[in-house]
Image (cartoon, rainbow, N blue to C red):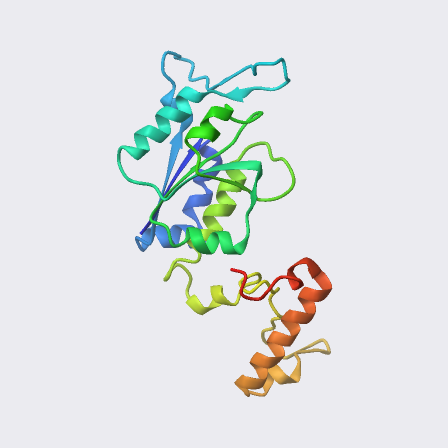
Length: 232
């Protein structure tokens, strides 16, 4: 079972996400256990539950303090050993399919959602083992990033989706975009499915799909086309 603990200032942003689709199915089948932890519950000496303060140096914005984050992480670590303590940050490594592949092999993960101007840098220096960004842009908070990381990782667990082979043919698994995909009817308003897909000749179909994937990647994502197919 993959155990994911998500630390956030706004757990309600993720509650609905965790109770639907593949994420819910994976938990119902005991393939994953995902817990939300309200950072405000770990504040000491502050009845208001305030987790942020002004930054030294006079910069604008607010910064999440060390104490509540440290307390939350130490509490979780007292219960189990973690493979990674992840911080969602716009300046972290860019999240890719190969990252999800590796995280899906872990047993226990912590995901700390960034918020406000960020967290006190000392937490990043001493407690965080991996920083991940879902793109070159800034979100209001790290909850959406945590949801992306969780979804992309959990769906890879054996049994999480109906057809396990489906995940292996997704875009980016081999640094290729997925080939075109069709369903019935084979002729809709004169829009026809490629004949090769109706031939029943699996070897030729696989060859066609690979060629389509390569061509689409070269056209739409030339940056991926430059990478070796085994870069996972």
